[in-house]
Length: 138
Image 1 (cartoon, rainbow, N blue to C red):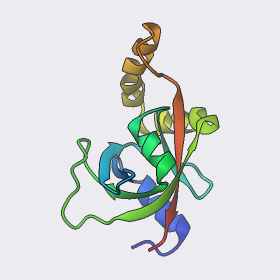
Image 2: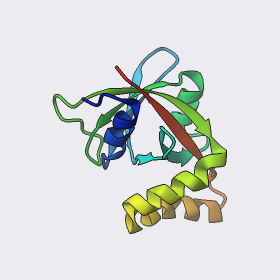
Image 3: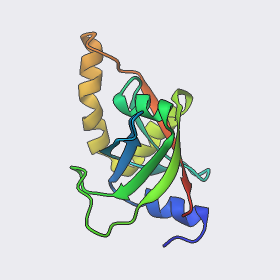
Image 4: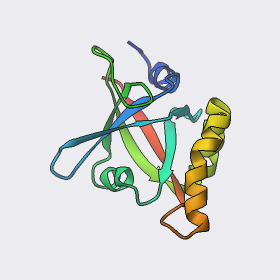
């Protein structure tokens, strides 16, 4: 188990996929897999579309949990759970996207293609926002 906040950030950011669990107003957990990157400032982050359900839940309840998972969001039995505080920061979206591209390579570019195509046809929000996570030691 990581001992310092820097160790915790490094441990979480080293994962390929992380199950992010946000919570509804009623407290129901809503897990979803995300790519995660170290932002180099004691925080980790990912991007998502502004107005997504994740962003709406984070705006209501910034406390989230993170667990290592596979690309489908399956969490292995006994996987560690990390707590974090989430904040939305659209001004850091380009920075986080660049770090995601550096970590995940061409796959990251391919995964952003559907959002770009939707934007061409005016089919919904395409503006990204960064979700900045500050892990909390347990």
